[in-house]
Length: 436
Image (cartoon, rainbow, N blue to C red; front, side):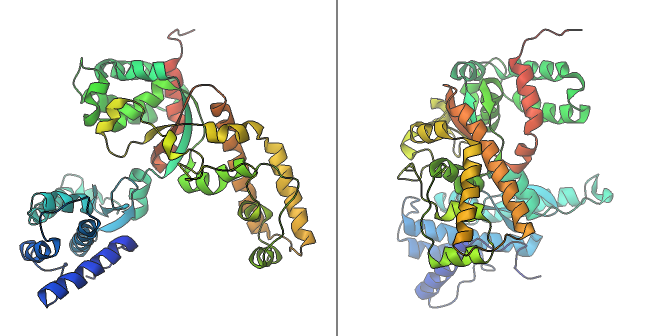
């Protein structure tokens, strides 16, 4: 079998591997094969390149670790048909998945552990554990049922927090929930699911109970959740959302917020438009929808944060953790943001005026020789425009609510379950009276 993975190796990893192989060959005066050579042998060569103990804060050492991670990933591809998939929580921006069982691995994390211990042979132990887990699935009780193969898309949907929503949080309610023991929170969730009646199918209730109640029950009872944050950071973030969120926007891919939604805030609804350069004029003549050109060529009426910031709207200097205890956790998905940079333009935002400005820009394009828009492109643009304007209407309510504003990252699977979570949140925060 070839070492080629289902999804291409991330370019930063491919480049690091090529660079490391070239350096090792230069040092050893022979080729050192990262795919087949024993790790103990590779380590002897790596020590020469490092020139001392491994130090993560040195860029040159990071490149070496990335190159080793790429080699380790390639070995897993050969043996298990493993593949890379995008993962924003992994240090290398991608992780390894396996088609025969739901196992996620960050090769870079495994390599760092091995380098810190000065023993690359630990990677053989990691590979052995994966081999054992896959064998258990292959020859387990459900093997005869013929489990469907998992793809890179399946892993990305489940593990990559590529979706974003903005939420208004009551800080006192969130803090009260974090200071509550997990066993009490679990009882509240079970009680609330019961009070939802037939608003949620039983299967969905069971999934929510398995996801949240069981996660809370695995923690130490009687001890505040916030004091056990490192044992359940994701469940703590979800508790803050369920108990503390007053309202939230819909969920959309981070790139959609960055490239479409937030630019509309800063562009506003201008009366005049700039002259088109040759490239933009050519796109207009080819029938590119005015909405896309509007985003591309119309300047911001209100300056965006100079450092771009989170989603292009929240300066890095305004970002904060939900609670000091989150300092112990890496890759926090719930980030408090300052809204000063976006408050003035979002308060002026009017979806009807923005639509009118885009339509007026379309007329302007016609005067510049723009062609008719293809129906296929028109449908896509109208869908994107409606989604962006809807998100901005929700976003405006949150920014002007006077409550703390948070950006919440979530996976595609979590975004798909948001309607059920919204019902649960309403039951948790609502009155405990049942009217017959």
